[in-house]
Image (cartoon, rainbow, N blue to C red):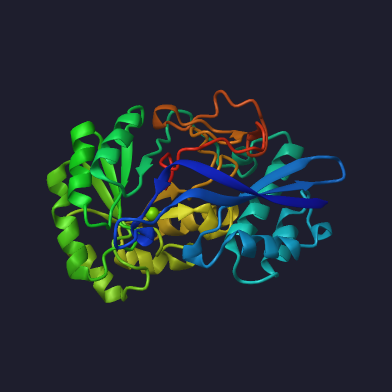
Length: 348
Ligand SMILES: [Mg+2]
């Protein structure tokens, strides 16, 4: 088996800002998001694709991801021995979930291609067309830009608004003006520092109408007793994202939240995400599958311009109907020069 990898800069059409990256003067955020694409090719020429979208929030970046990948001995990996290959990858250290996830995905992609199956059939998960609806995420911005983004997201039935800045009320009002009837999910990305502040910022949200839930209102490091208090008092369901890294956090999140957001970069790939989803459901939590800014290799949310053709998200509905690749991840490379891509998009 041969492993190759390269960095890909996803250029965003709009600056992408969330509570964590917002500067005191309203600056901050980024216009480029760096990911790492990997390819595993076996002796039969079968190629498995993977992607890492490392996040500084989890002490990972492109440099640390590539350093991890450099130490991988690809001769220890095999599409025929998925479990053995992952045992080897997990033995390389406790961290680097994004890099491990890329290998996990590439191994599954190759294994499924060898059997001529999509991964969702290989794992006996199946895929139901017209069932899974994605939301369109809108970063923190000026109200006028929010309004324009909302109009641009017209085909998407559900919006996610990033909050945790000083202008949240104006921004939600601008969203509501442009989309009076759409369901909105709100994501504070750990932006509110005390339980009282979080409750105050959540309490006015139902007045905006059709707000479905609030994601990660407080830092993941918040003592459980404060989160339990917030869960008891909040008028809207609260969802863990930064607090739910993997299945091991299920009991804590069941105590402190109503739901969890599972992401492949946190769980170390598809296998960990599946385990994290099952653990959350067993604990009585509602679940959502989210993503970082990434191309369709990783999340197959291919509705924004990306260098791959994968799952589509027209009108927010995930579909493989028009996908040419029939097996593995069901992703095909278009070309590897990233075209400008909209950072605000079907992302988590
Ligand atoms: Mg989130």
